[in-house]
Length: 333
Image (cartoon, rainbow, N blue to C red; front, side, top):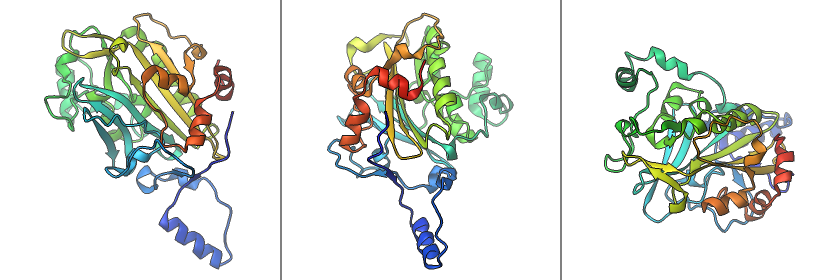
């Protein structure tokens, strides 16, 4: 099910000046997709026309109005961290609960311009002499991944490397390392512990990995999307959705989720949710339809208002669709 009533409008002063100049010269040509090739740092925020009563306020930071952002909690217990890197601007963003020392969600955009591969996780093997966290992890654990405490969080609220030692769970990425390979800096930021949650081996190497691979390989391409807006996380807000706490005080979610919004090349929108229980069962099933829910249902399950920056009418349309419609629209088996 696609909706073409609203289209993204990207305003860029240089582009506007160029179009005016070309028009005056009689050389105006049809628009193409070249703006997708621009790094995020050189793109203005996407604006979608229409009334919106539940949008995030943008007086503190205009990035809060980006389409991937869920509704901010706004009760003083959390802080929003916006990650930026050279050439690509915003890498990903997250809302971090200081009291629970855990993120509520992580979100980002995928489009042609930031989906290239200039760095892989295996490249960290060569960084022993250049990266202090690679050296530390190699000495203490024997792996080269640059896992590290979040440098933007104060010591009293951030998680530390030693809290994952012998805790019974793996360091589970929310924004995966493989989802940010356009630069070394972008990839390293995915190893900040604020982007990590305790996950069982069965989930991290099973259906969660299957979901991540499917999103990355099947939907992040020009044939499917102009922009893919991604939100992922584990449940921390409700006590009955917390699986346990480790002996080192790490919060372990009982469920994990994904919320995806696709803007296609024609300006239409569609959305889906994934909801999976955090068990130890080793399941790497490719039958992902069993985990599909509507965004409306996912909001009910999590208490999070996803894609609140869409106009209200478009938001209602993309959120309230049946599972069978979602499965058909997204080609899920």
